[in-house]
Image (cartoon, rainbow, N blue to C red; front, side, top):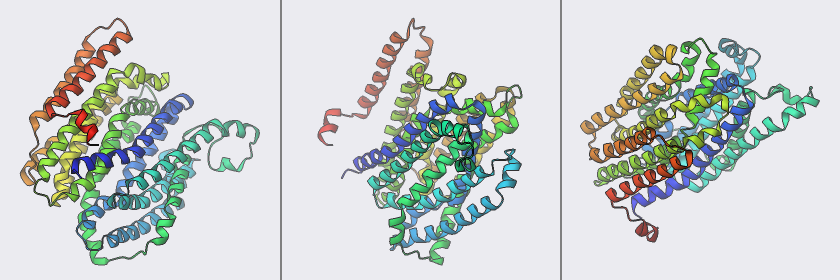
Length: 491
């Protein structure tokens, strides 16, 4: 099978669960921004940021490490078994710590009376990090359909619990003030509902893997473990500033946001704006699931660098299609969030541009994963984190969440530049930078043309935008010599 077709096919399957997850999460946004206060939504965002940062720390870089060693080792199952044993020990210890010190942690964060939320966070992290290795094995074994099915069940259960908690339980609690459920969530909708729903969905996901776990004979190879950790820990160390770069601004709102409005409210508005850029992060995530195994599997092929460069061309062009689609119809898309949160629409163009740069950086970063020079990841991501911190610390007190958005943009921009420069030196890939930059510039130009035209009504605006969007797609297909009829026939 044509390797590009295989990548596209698996991307589509992985994308099924990823798309559904993003759609469900986006479905939550209209609900959360209409039922919750800006403060509660801001607190939720803060907790989810802690989860995202700690997940990278706890997984120890083993998710990518498993792909590296499974493709080199004569017993790939032992690679995953060693990783699972490691995760079991780490996750058990972490959850026990959260459970024992939940009261103290809640007090330090200023959430006295919500110690159960600390336990939910600990449970979510412990379960998700452990099952991440199981999901990695499904990706390695090219069991994309099973991967997607399990993810869909997890997503569906989270959706079900959210609907139950937000639309059924409040009226139930009104007449049952002594219900045992009140030990787990509040009597009225707040951030506890969201965290408890995520925790329960993680438990259900773990239960799905029980048949697989019963068939696994956990074995631990000390020599293999040392080699895996030597490769994976630099990725974890690099991943920490990477994920901190993505989420540290949410944490900084507590300390740096303008004082005229509660920082939780500003964080809630910021997060609502970020959610409107969901289509971009959706595509990048589904591409990543399929691309990592694809890139590692082709590392020995002498024609791989040329193929990787071709992938980058299409990836960049498609990202700009998403960029234009969201911004051309933002007047309609923005109505999905509650009116109290719509000020966040102002940051959507910035965040979309930032995510395009992030996706390009992911492609460029494969050079140090493929060559084993993972230490360079630390320098790249740490530089990005430093830029994020400087921009937010200097400008957030005055400009609030606008500074947070620009922090993402400039951080990812510098990371892309560094990745391209170092990759050219240590693992040359013949990227066609003329094409890549042209796709970016043409897309950005169409957006600014759209903004400069004073349309008398929305219908005319959307009609012109549709023509511009299809014009960009036609430009991409013509330059890459993509024949739709041939693609359909060869599918």
